[in-house]
Image (tube, rainbow, N blue to C red; front, side, top):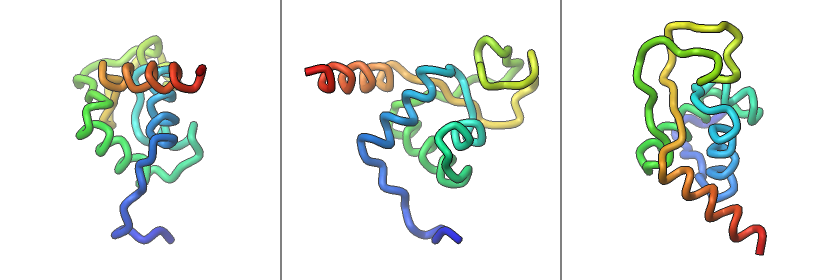
Length: 104
């Protein structure tokens, strides 16, 4: 069992992986991100919260979501029962900078 008092180390590689998930799939929530990245939901919740606080993610307004907005959803529309996130401009810039430096 994971030590709940231990903070997850947010290194540049982990930030990049999570942000790329949102780049590929758009709007999403912790459980879905965890499935895609093969991570524990509790860990992903903490990571998303910290990325939101750092300005890399934005919270999605409540309301109906369509599959075209949240591409990993199984239903066409649903009321969000989760906190949905999407990339912020700062997150987009992080990805662009990371890709630019890796192509050098």
